[in-house]
Image 1 (cartoon, rainbow, N blue to C red):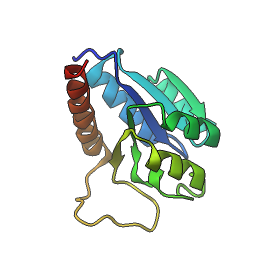
Image 2: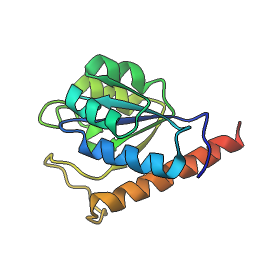
Image 3: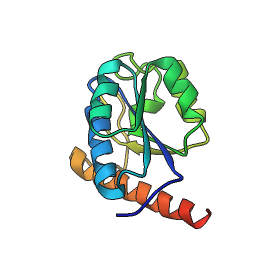
Length: 148
């Protein structure tokens, strides 16, 4: 397990928060408790589920997402976090703009209920996608540790 004390990671999810919770569990298992994980939900149910999965802190709604997006190193969530009005309208245009314009690195899980299809992406089950995302975060953490 790699110790982390510098990377601030924002996990963003909506609706029931299942994707975010799965991501947080995977990140905790791989990188331990030293990683600062902020759970941001489009609603309180999503935030609560991600908090139970092991996030350090959480916030819900548009203002929390907009304000937090610019103060983190990495944002991770489903690809729909970049799409205005996604997640049955829970992801507002302001949220999508804040996430897409944030200087943070974005790690996007190619799952969406929207009418969007991403070419070149193979359909993988969520656990496989989470494992891939966790490996990318591990690489970012190692890279950032070299610069500290």
